[in-house]
Image 1 (cartoon, rainbow, N blue to C red):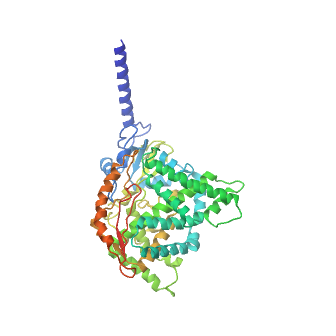
Image 2 (cartoon, one colour; image 1 turned 45 degrees about the vertical axis):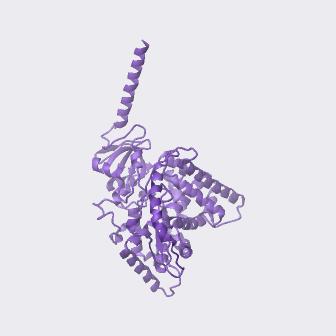
Length: 525
Protein backbone atom coordinates (compact mmCIF):
# COMPACT_ATOMS: atom_id res chain seq x y z
CA UNK A 1 0.00 0.00 0.00
CA UNK A 2 2.80 2.39 0.96
CA UNK A 3 4.59 1.50 -2.27
CA UNK A 4 1.47 2.29 -4.28
CA UNK A 5 1.08 5.67 -2.55
CA UNK A 6 4.74 6.47 -3.22
CA UNK A 7 4.38 5.52 -6.88
CA UNK A 8 1.25 7.64 -7.28
CA UNK A 9 2.98 10.57 -5.60
CA UNK A 10 6.02 10.23 -7.86
CA UNK A 11 3.83 10.05 -10.97
CA UNK A 12 1.90 13.13 -9.81
CA UNK A 13 5.14 15.05 -9.26
CA UNK A 14 6.42 14.07 -12.71
CA UNK A 15 3.13 15.04 -14.36
CA UNK A 16 3.08 18.39 -12.58
CA UNK A 17 6.73 19.03 -13.48
CA UNK A 18 6.14 18.18 -17.14
CA UNK A 19 3.03 20.38 -17.18
CA UNK A 20 4.96 23.26 -15.56
CA UNK A 21 7.83 22.94 -18.05
CA UNK A 22 5.34 22.80 -20.94
CA UNK A 23 3.55 25.92 -19.68
CA UNK A 24 6.90 27.68 -19.25
CA UNK A 25 8.04 26.91 -22.77
CA UNK A 26 4.62 27.65 -24.28
CA UNK A 27 3.21 30.73 -22.53
CA UNK A 28 -0.40 31.62 -23.20
CA UNK A 29 -1.63 34.72 -24.95
CA UNK A 30 -5.22 35.82 -24.37
CA UNK A 31 -5.44 37.79 -27.62
CA UNK A 32 -3.71 36.92 -30.89
CA UNK A 33 -0.40 35.08 -30.95
CA UNK A 34 3.00 35.63 -29.41
CA UNK A 35 6.10 36.33 -31.49
CA UNK A 36 8.03 33.15 -32.34
CA UNK A 37 10.90 32.10 -30.12
CA UNK A 38 11.98 29.92 -27.23
CA UNK A 39 11.65 30.50 -23.49
CA UNK A 40 14.66 28.29 -22.73
CA UNK A 41 15.03 26.44 -19.46
CA UNK A 42 12.56 26.97 -16.60
CA UNK A 43 13.55 29.95 -14.40
CA UNK A 44 16.90 30.43 -16.18
CA UNK A 45 15.35 30.96 -19.58
CA UNK A 46 18.06 31.88 -22.09
CA UNK A 47 19.93 34.21 -19.74
CA UNK A 48 23.23 32.33 -19.93
CA UNK A 49 23.21 32.33 -23.74
CA UNK A 50 22.36 36.04 -23.80
CA UNK A 51 25.34 36.90 -21.59
CA UNK A 52 27.79 34.69 -23.49
CA UNK A 53 31.02 36.57 -24.36
CA UNK A 54 31.23 38.17 -27.78
CA UNK A 55 34.74 38.98 -28.99
CA UNK A 56 33.78 40.89 -32.15
CA UNK A 57 32.21 44.16 -33.21
CA UNK A 58 29.35 42.26 -34.82
CA UNK A 59 25.90 41.58 -33.39
CA UNK A 60 26.08 38.96 -30.64
CA UNK A 61 25.58 35.33 -31.74
CA UNK A 62 22.54 35.11 -29.44
CA UNK A 63 20.71 37.85 -31.36
CA UNK A 64 22.06 36.87 -34.78
CA UNK A 65 21.04 33.21 -34.53
CA UNK A 66 17.51 34.07 -33.41
CA UNK A 67 17.02 36.65 -36.15
CA UNK A 68 17.86 33.94 -38.70
CA UNK A 69 15.53 31.46 -37.00
CA UNK A 70 12.57 33.63 -36.01
CA UNK A 71 12.88 36.97 -37.80
CA UNK A 72 13.43 40.54 -36.50
CA UNK A 73 11.01 40.15 -33.56
CA UNK A 74 11.16 37.14 -31.25
CA UNK A 75 10.40 36.09 -27.69
CA UNK A 76 12.75 34.75 -25.04
CA UNK A 77 13.21 34.71 -21.26
CA UNK A 78 15.94 36.74 -19.58
CA UNK A 79 16.68 37.09 -15.85
CA UNK A 80 13.41 35.35 -15.04
CA UNK A 81 11.23 37.62 -17.19
CA UNK A 82 9.41 36.98 -20.49
CA UNK A 83 10.91 39.32 -23.09
CA UNK A 84 10.09 40.31 -26.65
CA UNK A 85 13.30 41.28 -28.45
CA UNK A 86 12.94 43.80 -31.28
CA UNK A 87 15.52 44.38 -33.99
CA UNK A 88 12.90 46.03 -36.21
CA UNK A 89 13.50 49.82 -36.59
CA UNK A 90 9.78 50.59 -36.97
CA UNK A 91 8.78 48.64 -33.86
CA UNK A 92 11.66 50.24 -31.94
CA UNK A 93 10.43 53.71 -32.85
CA UNK A 94 6.89 52.75 -31.86
CA UNK A 95 8.09 51.54 -28.45
CA UNK A 96 9.98 54.80 -27.81
CA UNK A 97 7.09 56.98 -29.00
CA UNK A 98 4.53 55.21 -26.81
CA UNK A 99 6.41 55.48 -23.50
CA UNK A 100 4.05 56.57 -20.78
CA UNK A 101 1.04 55.31 -22.75
CA UNK A 102 1.72 51.71 -23.75
CA UNK A 103 5.21 51.20 -22.30
CA UNK A 104 7.31 52.32 -19.37
CA UNK A 105 11.03 52.10 -18.64
CA UNK A 106 12.14 48.89 -16.95
CA UNK A 107 15.41 47.42 -15.69
CA UNK A 108 16.20 44.00 -14.21
CA UNK A 109 15.84 43.83 -10.44
CA UNK A 110 19.60 43.56 -9.93
CA UNK A 111 20.20 46.80 -11.87
CA UNK A 112 17.57 48.58 -9.79
CA UNK A 113 19.27 47.32 -6.65
CA UNK A 114 22.70 48.39 -7.89
CA UNK A 115 21.79 51.88 -9.14
CA UNK A 116 19.22 52.61 -6.45
CA UNK A 117 15.47 52.21 -6.49
CA UNK A 118 15.03 55.96 -6.87
CA UNK A 119 17.53 56.39 -9.72
CA UNK A 120 16.39 58.53 -12.61
CA UNK A 121 16.12 55.54 -14.97
CA UNK A 122 13.56 53.84 -12.74
CA UNK A 123 11.29 56.87 -12.37
CA UNK A 124 8.38 57.60 -14.68
CA UNK A 125 6.12 60.37 -15.88
CA UNK A 126 6.36 63.81 -14.34
CA UNK A 127 9.07 62.84 -11.83
CA UNK A 128 11.40 61.66 -14.60
CA UNK A 129 10.81 64.82 -16.63
CA UNK A 130 11.44 66.95 -13.55
CA UNK A 131 14.79 65.30 -12.79
CA UNK A 132 15.75 65.54 -16.44
CA UNK A 133 15.12 69.29 -16.33
CA UNK A 134 17.39 69.55 -13.27
CA UNK A 135 20.21 67.71 -15.03
CA UNK A 136 19.88 69.96 -18.08
CA UNK A 137 20.74 72.90 -15.81
CA UNK A 138 24.26 71.44 -15.83
CA UNK A 139 24.46 69.74 -19.23
CA UNK A 140 22.14 71.93 -21.31
CA UNK A 141 23.28 74.07 -24.29
CA UNK A 142 23.74 77.30 -22.32
CA UNK A 143 25.88 75.62 -19.67
CA UNK A 144 27.95 73.85 -22.33
CA UNK A 145 28.62 77.13 -24.11
CA UNK A 146 29.15 79.44 -21.15
CA UNK A 147 30.65 77.18 -18.48
CA UNK A 148 31.82 73.78 -19.66
CA UNK A 149 33.56 74.46 -22.99
CA UNK A 150 36.53 76.24 -21.42
CA UNK A 151 36.82 73.74 -18.56
CA UNK A 152 36.74 70.77 -20.94
CA UNK A 153 39.52 72.25 -23.09
CA UNK A 154 41.65 73.09 -20.05
CA UNK A 155 41.29 69.54 -18.71
CA UNK A 156 42.07 67.91 -22.06
CA UNK A 157 45.18 70.01 -22.72
CA UNK A 158 46.48 69.61 -19.17
CA UNK A 159 46.06 65.84 -19.17
CA UNK A 160 47.63 65.37 -22.61
CA UNK A 161 50.60 67.47 -21.53
CA UNK A 162 50.96 65.41 -18.37
CA UNK A 163 50.72 62.10 -20.23
CA UNK A 164 53.37 63.11 -22.75
CA UNK A 165 55.95 63.29 -19.95
CA UNK A 166 55.28 59.73 -18.78
CA UNK A 167 56.95 56.56 -20.03
CA UNK A 168 53.60 54.78 -20.35
CA UNK A 169 49.91 55.32 -19.79
CA UNK A 170 46.72 53.28 -20.14
CA UNK A 171 44.33 55.21 -22.36
CA UNK A 172 40.98 53.93 -21.07
CA UNK A 173 41.93 54.44 -17.43
CA UNK A 174 43.54 57.82 -18.10
CA UNK A 175 40.54 59.18 -20.00
CA UNK A 176 38.20 57.77 -17.34
CA UNK A 177 40.08 59.65 -14.65
CA UNK A 178 40.23 62.84 -16.72
CA UNK A 179 36.49 62.86 -17.42
CA UNK A 180 35.59 61.79 -13.88
CA UNK A 181 37.70 64.57 -12.36
CA UNK A 182 36.12 67.20 -14.58
CA UNK A 183 32.53 66.05 -14.15
CA UNK A 184 32.87 65.39 -10.42
CA UNK A 185 34.25 68.90 -9.96
CA UNK A 186 31.10 70.30 -11.54
CA UNK A 187 28.86 67.93 -9.60
CA UNK A 188 30.42 67.93 -6.12
CA UNK A 189 33.39 70.36 -6.30
CA UNK A 190 35.72 67.39 -6.45
CA UNK A 191 39.46 68.06 -6.29
CA UNK A 192 42.19 65.46 -6.82
CA UNK A 193 43.21 64.12 -3.42
CA UNK A 194 43.71 60.82 -1.64
CA UNK A 195 40.07 60.76 -0.57
CA UNK A 196 38.81 61.43 -4.08
CA UNK A 197 41.15 58.77 -5.43
CA UNK A 198 39.36 56.38 -3.09
CA UNK A 199 36.06 57.51 -4.60
CA UNK A 200 37.34 56.56 -8.05
CA UNK A 201 38.53 53.16 -6.80
CA UNK A 202 35.07 52.44 -5.45
CA UNK A 203 33.60 53.18 -8.86
CA UNK A 204 36.11 50.78 -10.43
CA UNK A 205 34.94 48.04 -8.02
CA UNK A 206 31.34 48.93 -8.82
CA UNK A 207 31.84 48.72 -12.58
CA UNK A 208 33.74 45.41 -12.51
CA UNK A 209 30.79 43.70 -10.86
CA UNK A 210 28.07 45.47 -12.78
CA UNK A 211 27.43 42.55 -15.14
CA UNK A 212 27.58 39.64 -12.70
CA UNK A 213 25.42 36.95 -11.19
CA UNK A 214 23.49 38.48 -8.25
CA UNK A 215 25.08 36.50 -5.42
CA UNK A 216 25.97 38.91 -2.61
CA UNK A 217 28.66 36.81 -0.90
CA UNK A 218 32.22 37.89 -0.02
CA UNK A 219 34.55 37.25 -2.94
CA UNK A 220 31.94 37.55 -5.68
CA UNK A 221 31.96 40.32 -8.26
CA UNK A 222 28.43 41.29 -7.27
CA UNK A 223 29.49 41.72 -3.64
CA UNK A 224 32.39 43.97 -4.70
CA UNK A 225 29.96 45.94 -6.85
CA UNK A 226 27.56 46.49 -3.96
CA UNK A 227 30.41 47.42 -1.63
CA UNK A 228 31.65 49.96 -4.16
CA UNK A 229 28.18 51.51 -4.34
CA UNK A 230 27.86 51.48 -0.55
CA UNK A 231 31.16 53.32 -0.12
CA UNK A 232 30.35 55.94 -2.77
CA UNK A 233 26.91 56.55 -1.27
CA UNK A 234 28.50 56.97 2.16
CA UNK A 235 30.74 59.73 0.80
CA UNK A 236 27.78 61.45 -0.87
CA UNK A 237 25.61 61.19 2.26
CA UNK A 238 28.34 62.70 4.43
CA UNK A 239 28.82 65.49 1.91
CA UNK A 240 25.09 66.19 1.85
CA UNK A 241 24.96 66.28 5.65
CA UNK A 242 27.92 68.69 5.88
CA UNK A 243 26.45 71.07 3.32
CA UNK A 244 23.02 71.13 4.90
CA UNK A 245 24.66 71.89 8.24
CA UNK A 246 26.61 74.80 6.68
CA UNK A 247 24.09 76.43 4.33
CA UNK A 248 26.04 79.69 4.04
CA UNK A 249 29.04 78.01 2.46
CA UNK A 250 28.32 77.81 -1.25
CA UNK A 251 30.37 75.74 -3.71
CA UNK A 252 28.60 76.72 -6.91
CA UNK A 253 28.23 73.12 -8.09
CA UNK A 254 25.30 70.89 -9.02
CA UNK A 255 25.08 69.49 -5.49
CA UNK A 256 24.34 72.99 -4.19
CA UNK A 257 21.56 73.28 -6.75
CA UNK A 258 20.05 69.95 -5.63
CA UNK A 259 20.21 71.03 -1.98
CA UNK A 260 18.31 74.20 -2.88
CA UNK A 261 15.62 71.99 -4.40
CA UNK A 262 15.60 69.79 -1.29
CA UNK A 263 15.19 72.78 1.00
CA UNK A 264 12.15 74.15 -0.80
CA UNK A 265 8.95 74.06 1.23
CA UNK A 266 7.22 71.69 -1.17
CA UNK A 267 10.22 69.93 -2.61
CA UNK A 268 9.50 67.27 -5.23
CA UNK A 269 12.66 65.31 -4.48
CA UNK A 270 13.88 63.43 -1.43
CA UNK A 271 17.41 62.88 -0.16
CA UNK A 272 17.30 59.35 -1.58
CA UNK A 273 16.35 60.59 -5.05
CA UNK A 274 19.03 63.31 -4.93
CA UNK A 275 21.77 60.88 -3.86
CA UNK A 276 20.79 58.24 -6.44
CA UNK A 277 20.83 60.94 -9.12
CA UNK A 278 24.33 62.04 -8.12
CA UNK A 279 25.51 58.43 -8.15
CA UNK A 280 24.18 57.78 -11.66
CA UNK A 281 25.71 61.00 -13.03
CA UNK A 282 29.11 60.16 -11.53
CA UNK A 283 28.93 56.63 -12.94
CA UNK A 284 28.08 57.90 -16.42
CA UNK A 285 30.99 60.34 -16.33
CA UNK A 286 33.39 57.63 -15.21
CA UNK A 287 32.68 54.89 -17.72
CA UNK A 288 30.66 55.52 -20.85
CA UNK A 289 32.29 58.61 -22.39
CA UNK A 290 35.81 57.34 -21.79
CA UNK A 291 34.99 54.06 -23.51
CA UNK A 292 33.67 55.74 -26.66
CA UNK A 293 36.58 58.21 -26.66
CA UNK A 294 39.13 55.40 -26.43
CA UNK A 295 37.46 53.55 -29.29
CA UNK A 296 37.52 56.74 -31.36
CA UNK A 297 41.29 57.04 -30.91
CA UNK A 298 41.71 53.41 -31.90
CA UNK A 299 39.63 53.91 -35.06
CA UNK A 300 41.60 57.02 -35.99
CA UNK A 301 44.81 55.06 -35.59
CA UNK A 302 43.52 52.25 -37.78
CA UNK A 303 42.31 54.65 -40.49
CA UNK A 304 45.01 57.21 -41.45
CA UNK A 305 42.77 58.77 -44.10
CA UNK A 306 40.18 59.63 -41.45
CA UNK A 307 42.87 61.01 -39.14
CA UNK A 308 44.27 63.13 -41.97
CA UNK A 309 40.85 64.62 -42.76
CA UNK A 310 40.17 65.23 -39.07
CA UNK A 311 43.55 66.90 -38.53
CA UNK A 312 42.97 69.10 -41.56
CA UNK A 313 39.66 70.29 -40.10
CA UNK A 314 41.22 71.23 -36.77
CA UNK A 315 44.33 72.80 -38.29
CA UNK A 316 42.05 74.98 -40.40
CA UNK A 317 40.23 76.14 -37.27
CA UNK A 318 43.52 77.29 -35.73
CA UNK A 319 44.73 78.94 -38.94
CA UNK A 320 41.55 81.00 -39.17
CA UNK A 321 41.96 82.44 -35.68
CA UNK A 322 43.29 85.94 -35.19
CA UNK A 323 45.30 84.62 -32.25
CA UNK A 324 46.27 80.92 -32.61
CA UNK A 325 46.97 80.71 -28.86
CA UNK A 326 43.37 81.37 -27.83
CA UNK A 327 41.05 78.54 -26.90
CA UNK A 328 38.22 76.96 -28.86
CA UNK A 329 35.18 79.19 -29.24
CA UNK A 330 31.61 77.95 -29.34
CA UNK A 331 31.36 78.89 -33.01
CA UNK A 332 34.52 76.89 -33.77
CA UNK A 333 33.16 73.92 -31.87
CA UNK A 334 29.89 73.99 -33.80
CA UNK A 335 31.85 74.12 -37.07
CA UNK A 336 33.58 70.75 -36.46
CA UNK A 337 31.38 68.94 -38.99
CA UNK A 338 33.70 66.03 -39.76
CA UNK A 339 34.52 65.60 -36.07
CA UNK A 340 30.83 65.05 -35.33
CA UNK A 341 30.73 62.50 -38.14
CA UNK A 342 33.63 60.63 -36.49
CA UNK A 343 31.90 60.74 -33.10
CA UNK A 344 28.61 59.47 -34.54
CA UNK A 345 30.30 56.63 -36.43
CA UNK A 346 32.24 55.63 -33.32
CA UNK A 347 29.04 55.57 -31.27
CA UNK A 348 27.36 53.44 -33.93
CA UNK A 349 30.10 50.81 -33.83
CA UNK A 350 30.66 51.02 -30.07
CA UNK A 351 27.10 49.98 -29.19
CA UNK A 352 27.71 50.76 -25.53
CA UNK A 353 24.15 49.70 -24.67
CA UNK A 354 23.34 46.19 -26.01
CA UNK A 355 19.67 46.53 -25.10
CA UNK A 356 17.11 49.16 -24.02
CA UNK A 357 14.29 47.73 -21.91
CA UNK A 358 10.65 48.71 -21.63
CA UNK A 359 7.63 47.08 -19.95
CA UNK A 360 4.26 46.69 -21.70
CA UNK A 361 1.47 48.34 -19.70
CA UNK A 362 -1.34 46.59 -21.61
CA UNK A 363 -1.80 43.96 -24.31
CA UNK A 364 -0.37 45.43 -27.51
CA UNK A 365 -1.02 44.06 -30.99
CA UNK A 366 1.53 45.02 -33.63
CA UNK A 367 2.90 43.45 -36.81
CA UNK A 368 0.55 40.48 -36.42
CA UNK A 369 1.80 39.61 -32.92
CA UNK A 370 0.69 40.38 -29.39
CA UNK A 371 2.94 41.71 -26.63
CA UNK A 372 1.09 40.74 -23.42
CA UNK A 373 0.73 43.23 -20.58
CA UNK A 374 3.57 42.85 -18.11
CA UNK A 375 6.00 41.42 -20.66
CA UNK A 376 9.30 43.19 -21.20
CA UNK A 377 10.45 44.53 -24.56
CA UNK A 378 14.14 44.79 -25.39
CA UNK A 379 15.04 47.18 -28.18
CA UNK A 380 18.35 46.00 -29.64
CA UNK A 381 20.39 48.93 -31.05
CA UNK A 382 23.38 46.82 -32.27
CA UNK A 383 21.14 44.79 -34.58
CA UNK A 384 20.00 48.04 -36.23
CA UNK A 385 23.39 49.78 -36.24
CA UNK A 386 25.05 46.77 -37.88
CA UNK A 387 22.28 45.88 -40.32
CA UNK A 388 23.72 45.73 -43.90
CA UNK A 389 20.31 46.70 -45.29
CA UNK A 390 20.57 50.01 -43.42
CA UNK A 391 24.32 50.68 -43.45
CA UNK A 392 26.56 49.64 -46.31
CA UNK A 393 29.50 47.59 -45.00
CA UNK A 394 28.24 48.05 -41.41
CA UNK A 395 31.43 46.79 -39.75
CA UNK A 396 33.54 49.34 -41.63
CA UNK A 397 34.48 52.58 -39.88
CA UNK A 398 33.27 55.20 -42.35
CA UNK A 399 32.53 58.68 -40.93
CA UNK A 400 31.64 59.97 -44.41
CA UNK A 401 28.41 57.95 -44.31
CA UNK A 402 27.02 60.57 -41.88
CA UNK A 403 27.53 63.60 -44.10
CA UNK A 404 24.37 65.73 -44.15
CA UNK A 405 22.39 63.12 -42.18
CA UNK A 406 20.01 64.34 -39.43
CA UNK A 407 21.32 61.80 -36.89
CA UNK A 408 24.31 64.10 -36.32
CA UNK A 409 22.01 66.29 -34.23
CA UNK A 410 19.95 63.58 -32.53
CA UNK A 411 18.63 60.07 -32.93
CA UNK A 412 16.38 58.21 -35.35
CA UNK A 413 14.93 54.76 -35.84
CA UNK A 414 18.26 53.82 -37.46
CA UNK A 415 20.52 55.39 -34.82
CA UNK A 416 19.91 54.79 -31.11
CA UNK A 417 23.39 55.07 -29.61
CA UNK A 418 22.07 57.70 -27.18
CA UNK A 419 18.66 56.13 -26.62
CA UNK A 420 15.39 57.33 -28.04
CA UNK A 421 12.08 58.98 -27.33
CA UNK A 422 11.59 60.96 -24.13
CA UNK A 423 14.58 59.15 -22.56
CA UNK A 424 17.11 60.36 -25.11
CA UNK A 425 20.32 60.71 -23.08
CA UNK A 426 20.56 64.13 -21.40
CA UNK A 427 24.36 63.91 -21.44
CA UNK A 428 24.66 63.40 -25.20
CA UNK A 429 25.83 66.92 -26.02
CA UNK A 430 28.26 66.94 -23.09
CA UNK A 431 29.74 63.67 -24.36
CA UNK A 432 30.15 65.10 -27.86
CA UNK A 433 31.75 68.25 -26.45
CA UNK A 434 34.31 66.29 -24.43
CA UNK A 435 35.21 64.03 -27.35
CA UNK A 436 35.48 66.85 -29.89
CA UNK A 437 37.64 69.07 -27.69
CA UNK A 438 39.90 66.19 -26.64
CA UNK A 439 40.41 65.23 -30.27
CA UNK A 440 41.11 68.87 -31.14
CA UNK A 441 43.86 69.12 -28.53
CA UNK A 442 45.27 65.73 -29.51
CA UNK A 443 45.54 66.07 -33.29
CA UNK A 444 46.79 69.68 -33.26
CA UNK A 445 49.57 69.15 -30.70
CA UNK A 446 50.54 65.46 -30.62
CA UNK A 447 51.31 62.44 -32.77
CA UNK A 448 50.50 58.87 -31.79
CA UNK A 449 50.62 55.33 -33.18
CA UNK A 450 49.79 51.81 -32.10
CA UNK A 451 52.69 50.16 -30.35
CA UNK A 452 51.83 46.93 -32.18
CA UNK A 453 50.22 46.33 -35.58
CA UNK A 454 46.45 45.93 -35.38
CA UNK A 455 46.58 42.22 -36.18
CA UNK A 456 49.03 41.46 -33.37
CA UNK A 457 46.86 42.32 -30.40
CA UNK A 458 43.61 41.05 -28.98
CA UNK A 459 40.64 43.39 -28.91
CA UNK A 460 37.69 42.25 -26.83
CA UNK A 461 34.54 44.20 -27.55
CA UNK A 462 31.95 44.64 -24.82
CA UNK A 463 32.33 41.13 -23.50
CA UNK A 464 29.80 40.39 -20.79
CA UNK A 465 30.50 37.37 -18.60
CA UNK A 466 28.62 35.99 -15.62
CA UNK A 467 30.58 35.19 -12.49
CA UNK A 468 29.27 32.85 -9.82
CA UNK A 469 31.12 32.87 -6.51
CA UNK A 470 34.86 32.46 -6.97
CA UNK A 471 34.54 30.45 -10.19
CA UNK A 472 36.33 32.73 -12.61
CA UNK A 473 37.44 30.26 -15.25
CA UNK A 474 36.64 32.66 -18.09
CA UNK A 475 38.79 35.36 -16.54
CA UNK A 476 41.61 32.89 -16.00
CA UNK A 477 41.43 32.01 -19.70
CA UNK A 478 41.65 35.70 -20.64
CA UNK A 479 44.55 36.16 -18.23
CA UNK A 480 46.43 33.28 -19.86
CA UNK A 481 45.85 34.53 -23.40
CA UNK A 482 46.68 38.13 -22.56
CA UNK A 483 49.81 37.14 -20.64
CA UNK A 484 51.22 35.97 -23.97
CA UNK A 485 50.30 39.35 -25.44
CA UNK A 486 52.05 41.10 -22.55
CA UNK A 487 55.23 39.14 -23.25
CA UNK A 488 55.11 40.21 -26.91
CA UNK A 489 54.87 43.85 -25.91
CA UNK A 490 57.41 43.78 -23.09
CA UNK A 491 60.40 44.16 -25.37
CA UNK A 492 58.93 47.25 -26.98
CA UNK A 493 58.40 48.90 -23.60
CA UNK A 494 62.01 48.64 -22.49
CA UNK A 495 63.33 51.16 -24.99
CA UNK A 496 63.32 54.69 -23.62
CA UNK A 497 63.09 57.98 -25.46
CA UNK A 498 63.59 61.53 -24.33
CA UNK A 499 60.52 63.79 -24.15
CA UNK A 500 61.81 65.74 -27.15
CA UNK A 501 62.22 62.63 -29.27
CA UNK A 502 59.77 59.80 -29.83
CA UNK A 503 57.70 59.02 -26.74
CA UNK A 504 56.25 55.53 -26.64
CA UNK A 505 53.16 55.20 -24.52
CA UNK A 506 51.65 51.72 -24.45
CA UNK A 507 47.96 51.98 -23.72
CA UNK A 508 45.37 49.32 -23.06
CA UNK A 509 41.62 49.26 -23.10
CA UNK A 510 39.89 47.25 -20.38
CA UNK A 511 36.18 46.49 -20.30
CA UNK A 512 34.42 46.09 -16.96
CA UNK A 513 33.52 42.45 -17.54
CA UNK A 514 37.08 41.53 -18.54
CA UNK A 515 40.19 40.73 -16.62
CA UNK A 516 42.34 43.76 -15.83
CA UNK A 517 45.10 42.46 -18.09
CA UNK A 518 43.09 42.72 -21.32
CA UNK A 519 44.99 45.34 -23.28
CA UNK A 520 45.29 47.50 -26.33
CA UNK A 521 48.77 48.98 -26.63
CA UNK A 522 49.45 52.47 -27.92
CA UNK A 523 52.39 54.75 -28.43
CA UNK A 524 52.35 58.51 -28.61
CA UNK A 525 54.92 60.64 -30.35
